[in-house]
Length: 490
Image (cartoon, rainbow, N blue to C red; front, side, top):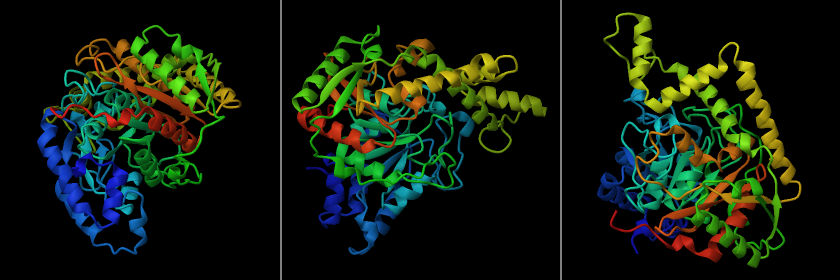
């Protein structure tokens, strides 16, 4: 079997046992990227020389060294193009950050290097992580490896495509309102949004600071659990990082789930726009979990109907504030034709930002403006508290919730790009998780009639990612959807 067909855990084991080397594994994925990326547009910058050099250094580390005990030692990884790696480009797939070179390593990058994981390059994304299809990238969209006429999801579409198509064994993305879980659903891989504060945001280019969270993509639960263990942990450089012990997540796998209680929120399954194939996958998942001994109950999350409006007030307000720093003065793109400072500011931002980013900056500026702050932003923050309280009430009696990840399988490229509201509705089942700050994971839940992947979502208690892994692994082993791969013709 080719190295690129092995799981991350299998690759790490082979490297540990001396059956292969990190450099050989990295070279195999580089070769795969060179062959396939042109037809998928998953990577927007390649750091092959750095990756091979790092892999060679890791191979020199002696067998007894504690660094080799890292669960994914020697395994290469892809980074979303909004995470800083010193000396490399990070553009957020935006013209306004063209040719920007990161001056330092993000906290997660430091952890990856400490764990001995070579970084293959940066993956495609919606500009500044604003989108659900990766069509807002200045580099053009990534293409879904199951059907290249369809979107891969967003905003972390490139990372999802890289893992699904075997261009990288694992990848990192960021999730502000579903940007890991929704593309994981579209591409048939596993995507986890950890608890807010579980993974440091230091070195992640900010979109909405109270919602953003870095998380892993992988082909299966075992690899996802291993990668979270690598990147999780307290970081004093991030004021929102939480001092919470990071368990060995692999210890939760292969455990009985008999007696665990799973809640089904009635507001999610009763919504219009839910595709029959997605609804069918949820019903099948319930049957599988019941056979495994899990117990179910219907619950209400009464403030669900306000989630979308609340999210698009808070997220755009924070984006307006965070993106004010891109003005052509300090770094990135600058209009050199401007004759005055004011003209330089306005023309740089008008030319440097894409339509969706401009739309969200304007929305955010409006809801923060004098006379509207109390009516919109302050009210949205109060509703956010009520949304979190809904989850807290459910978790008094249940271990997790089971919901769809997205209302439909991957839609066609260009189908919703002209209708922002329809695009925003792609995240209808994921945004509440970010507003509440709880963990959520998307796992492969079957296929549609068009043979497109369908994701199902498990939502857990704060800092109880281990319980999610336990439930997700049990389902994965029973359903066996992960054995399917996208067509090799991609």
